[in-house]
Image 1: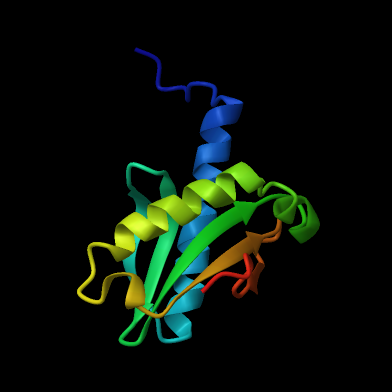
Image 2: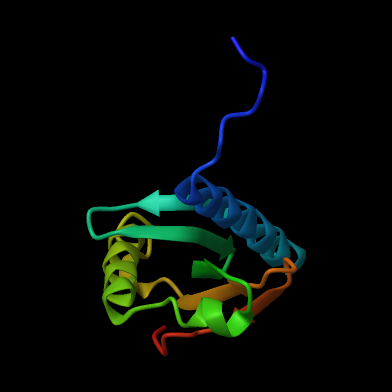
Amino acid sequence: MSLLAQPVSRGQMAHHAGSAAEITVARHYETLGFRVAEKRWRGEGGEIDLIMETPDQVVFVEVKQSRSFEAAALRISQRQRMRIFAAAAEYLGTLPNGSLTEARFDVALVNGLGEVQILENAFGES
């Protein structure tokens, strides 16, 4: 058996880059006083990359990574937003205050240098 590394597909590279971006974003939120409640939470309606919490608020975070912030931002579709809303509603239903829980939707953009830009309340919903 050869010890040489097997070639990595474009899909595998994208998966690893996305995972690294999520870790970077989670750490960023942790420095702001949030804790990671869930990573890649999947409900019937879709998946949420990160769910961050403080005692008073839940933040649903969509992480997008690309060579630039602009390119990352362009990767968010209306259909994806609808899936995130559906999954978030499902998640809120599991919490004691349900849909009355203070929540917002952020988009975290990660550029090719690993820098993070947070767009708070990016979808205009709360």
